[in-house]
Length: 148
Image (cartoon, rainbow, N blue to C red; front, side, top):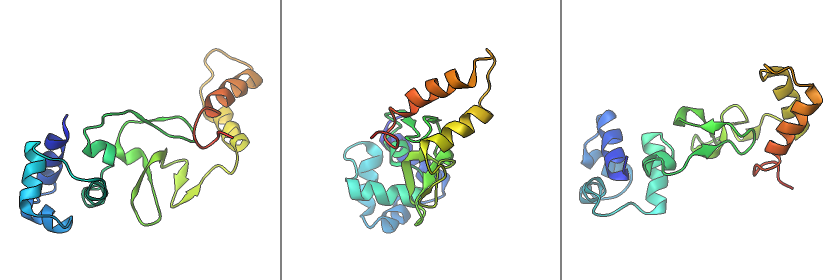
């Protein structure tokens, strides 16, 4: 879905007029109208305001052009409800809500996360824990949070 359609759908779902949304993000009604027709797009700062006001990620506002993954555990972030939040309530698109909460990481080290994964991830093939740990470690080491 394109941004123009997403924005209109989100605005209407919240029962807001173009005028009301415009007031909340400090622009004119005409600006909102131009966004919803695809004539223009909001700037970066306005996207942040829209994200906060509509309680969705910027990725969602832009029509979900990229698949988000938690940069701590690697889980696909398929809906905004899975995203973490900063202490001020803004959405953090880099991490899931289970790895990063209220500005703090849940797992103090990669070993702590690996211990959790070994204990909780299914093991249908009966692989030894050491092999599973090496596999998970190789995957986690590619993520932003765990890169040296």
